Length: 309
Image 1 (cartoon, rainbow, N blue to C red):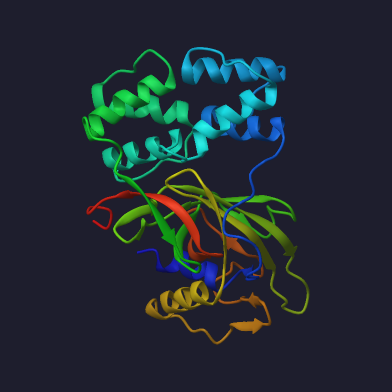
Image 2: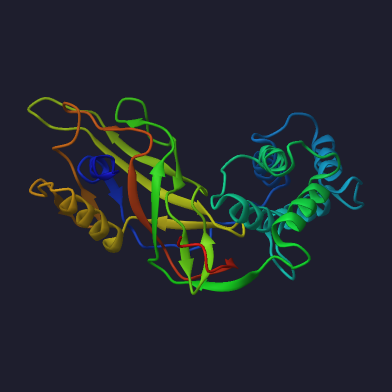
């Protein structure tokens, strides 16, 4: 039962709930920013070397050959193949669909690790070749001759997403500007399509930290800029609004907790008290909470009747 872990978030943290902004996170504009994003999702971290060396490596690893054109054109082509779903599912969309079919969960690990792990799980060994060729073999295993059953789906604003912290977060180990990592804790299904899978990664940003002070004043922690990766690889902006707060309150009441200490101040929910260790905020890895999408978004989801099982 995750009630206590979930409850510790409800009774010990501060969340910004501003509703301004679009639902889809902005696309990086520069060659460097796009390469870093692709490399992080492919290898686990940005790579070293010159821009051309990094572009060449990505092209070789995915396609086995180099493209022609400018640095920006080649970078855009790599970025588009990994994240964009115009005309056909992106590499990440296909990989997510394959992994969910095999495991009923999507890993936050990079492409390199995910492909290797699934190959080992399916056949007991890894394969040679480009990432695209290896993903195609996994797709044949998962779907046979059929195409990935993916369809465009409208995900309305304020759709709830249950998440769990990846790392411990305390008022003593974070500072303003730090990134807080989490994973999706339950599948999000819209109109029979899996749009956000359990295990998908996400991040939030520490907006403010106030340490415990004299006269019994507890620590406070403010998180904002929640972003969740979806089945098609899109990053969707989320926040803690009324729906998410109500869901957390219901969880607290179901766990038999008193909500007497909750105070709402304007657009910021200030929550503090009972389930903190001393006067500090201590949120262990696995602590669960709810966030919600900021606005309507068109996302590709995998058609399935099994996602809720």
